[in-house]
Length: 252
Ligand code: VGL
Ligand code: ZN
Image (cartoon, rainbow, N blue to C red):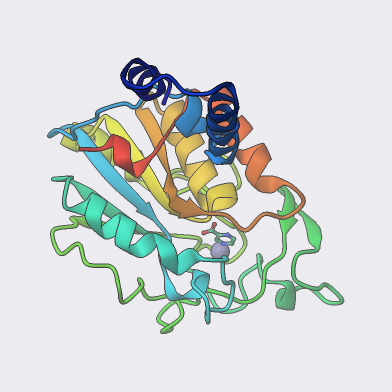
């Protein structure tokens, strides 16, 4: 922007008013731009054989019309499909709950969705019944079109334990096996996208970092649920864990 203005001024000097107006236009355009776009030097990332696109929970349940819809969750599907074409390695995850799962409000007398309950492993947010094993609601979104994806990893199938993370369940110790899979295949650079930014994306990204992997979250290929500022808190927790925040346009 600055460079372009400078060039224009050489061609044809601008009046003070025009210069000021242009400056204000630039300033307001910058204000509208996401922080990441303003300050991050546009990375140019070309996924290689050690890179994997990890597509978290892009399932009917989390899309408009599903049982736990994330606002605009469907809008990330074309972004993810385009990303999928740039990665040799792609993994999907699937939230895969038992009927009557302990994370469902309906399993706790007198509790409503989005209230919390104390579980042996800590505070659990209670959700509407969602992603029940074998249901249409739990299926990966119809619009996903990445036929070369290699693995679908399921989580949240232990009745008494939730699992936002696709690496370690909410008890902090039960493993899904994904770390072992990635290590055996030499996939050390993980690019995370999907639903929801503030729950399964965030916990998965943090656990991937804790496992010693290089982790980036592709912001415009995610959407959040946002309970009481949880999206902001998630970005802070991910930054503290060493997770990079990038845009799909950084991947070429
Ligand atoms: C998720 C809430 C409950 C998610 C899964 O995929 O982010 N959120 N189950
Ligand atoms: Zn769930």
